[in-house]
Length: 392
Image 1 (cartoon, rainbow, N blue to C red):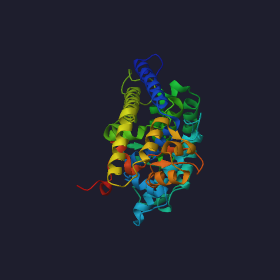
Image 2 (tube, rainbow, N blue to C red):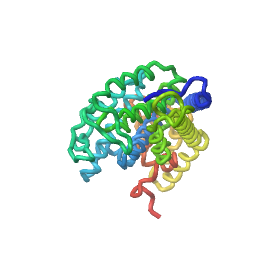
Image 3 (cartoon, rainbow, N blue to C red):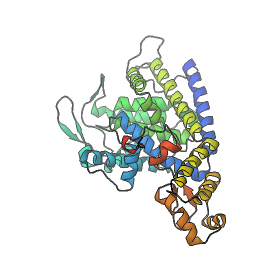
Image 4 (cartoon, rainbow, N blue to C red):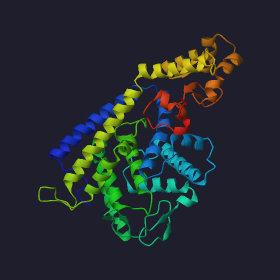
């Protein structure tokens, strides 16, 4: 599977270094522009978005609203939809663990890859813990964190034999495990493809690879978990699949690197991957631009208050939180010029809608990002759920 990285001193390496530097600067800048409480709440919504797009690439369509319902224990009566909700919930749990620092400093290692797979499949419904051999039709049990023991073909790519998987994963560790921030940002696309090329598990390789990539970028460019490469890959799905297939190809000629696989194809995928990341940071940056973001929420609140769905005084609290990031409980009474009991009655509808959240009855109040309101607050983050769309 050599080359594992773009060659030092080559033109493609220079271009990738510039893109990686720009990505690091832009990503860290976006994260710093958000108050910490807003950052944490936004990351929660992005986890559902990331899960939605990553599973969509696999052909599993579970809308973030249904994912949010599953997180609240509200499952569909349809067995298939319920299974997909549980699958999404498992994905969210793994990403939350990653976002909390579960793979800090070791994202691009075989140990991390196995742990992602193990955690994911230990939470999966039984029916989704089986893979089918497309040639024989035999059902095979997926072992959480266990390397495959069967030969597999992915499209035109015939993966390495099961016995070779541990050896190739050792090489994966040697190359990617000790790279610094800039180097692993450049190599993130290569690690993403080479993991898919090894195909270490009987099932789940794509989602594990995208979770690994998320973990790499969380460390290397300080993403904060507030943007998602999976969204960009899903929205450029044909190009994504074409690049992965091209990277499977052998070296084309003497100018195409010195390894077995094509360095030119790897360079193209690296460029594509980093540009997708940059596009996603820019997309989120524009959506959460403070003035426009606050204005969208204020317009939503004014409409709800005019319809009698929310008390007008609650807007004072919402505005304060939008500017400060969070609001201590004591400040709420002072802002509203009411007693504690009256203040709680004013903000209760915002909590019931999932707009506000708090870790306890004494903790500060923070903004939440319910998936049901994403279309109004953060338009374009993911497609509208048809049945949730407003009636004409």
